[in-house]
Amino acid sequence: MALIKTQTIKTEITANAEVTKKLQNAVVAAGTMLQFCKEAARGAVKAHGEKLSKVPFDQAVKTIRECYREALGDKSDANVLSNFTDSVTLLLADQTPISIEVKKSGDTEELHMKAADALNQSKHTMKAAAKQVREIKGGARQGGAGRKAHQKPSVPVAIALTPAQKTAHQIRVVKAVLADADDAFFAALKTELAELGYNLTKKRK
Image 1 (cartoon, rainbow, N blue to C red):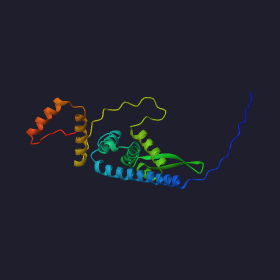
Image 2: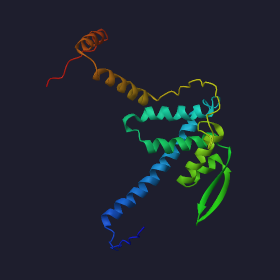
Image 3: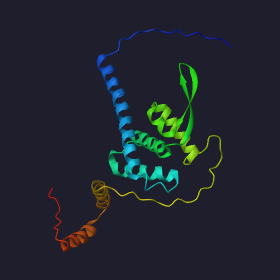
Image 4: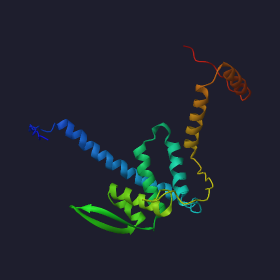
């Protein structure tokens, strides 16, 4: 087999100031976003932690996550929810001891801490800690394991929405219904609203 040596063309470029500035802004925004997620998690655990203290750990995390996913509505963001959920996981686990391997200057170092303390570590370390907590407390498949151990069915726990969140949710529900409604539905709706003292009229084109 013949080996063909390819030529490498070296070309140097100079960083564009505008591009660099945008990337710097992105770095700052990413850090700010993570900090806001952590602060939101602290507020959520403070507000709902006591009510959820009697339910299974994974259910408590899921209940908080889904409550605020609903509250965010169309403005929901996967990265925000992921960071928020990891932060909630660590805070609810609080005193759970964990051990995490982190790389520093090419070497691997094992850190021992309580789950809540991992919130003050780097994003990578924080996420590794949240993953380990889920493996310990439930809610994630154990590494190298087969099927999950049988768990008792969890009892749904509702978190009360604020008036603003409730209104936003109701509007989304009504909007979804109206999107598929026909003339017969609007005629019936008009009658019902009239009985309540409201007048429903169609917008002129």
